[in-house]
Length: 157
Image (cartoon, rainbow, N blue to C red; front, side):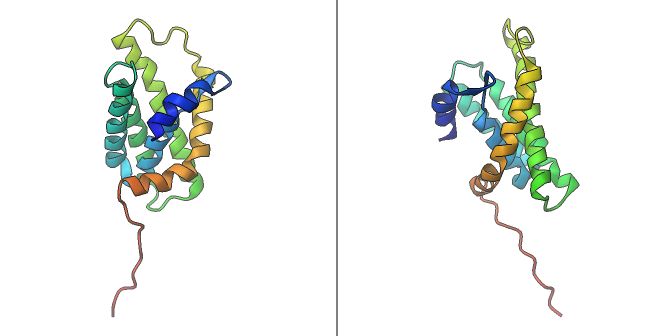
C-alpha cells in the first residue's frame, strides 16, 4: 500500500523540490522495534518490491532501504526501550543513510550519480520527513513484523 502511495500521490507532490520518501521512512521505522537484522530484511524485501514496480535498477532501493532499516535498528544497542525522541532521531538517521546510498549505487550502475544531486537540500528534507512520519510508522512496523509489546512480569517468590 505504501509503495502505491509513493508512486502515485507522493510522486507528484514535493517539498522544496524533494519527493517525500514514505517507503524509506517505513523501512527505517520498522528497524526501531524489530532490531537491526529484522529492519534490514524488511527494508531489503520492500526495496525489491519497489524496484520491481519502477524502472529503477534491480536492487538499488533494496540496498538503500535495507541500510535504512539496519541503521535505525541500531537504537537497540543504545537503549532497550528507547524514548520517543531517540526513536525519532534514529528513524531520521536511517532515512538519511538510505537516501545517501542511492547516488552511490547510481554511480556504479548508470551514468548518473553525484552529478546533479542536491544532497544539501535532499538529506535534511528526508530526515525531517522521516522523523515526522515515525510516530505513525513505528507501531505499523511492529505490527508488520508481528512483534509483541514487551511485558514485565514480577518474579515469583
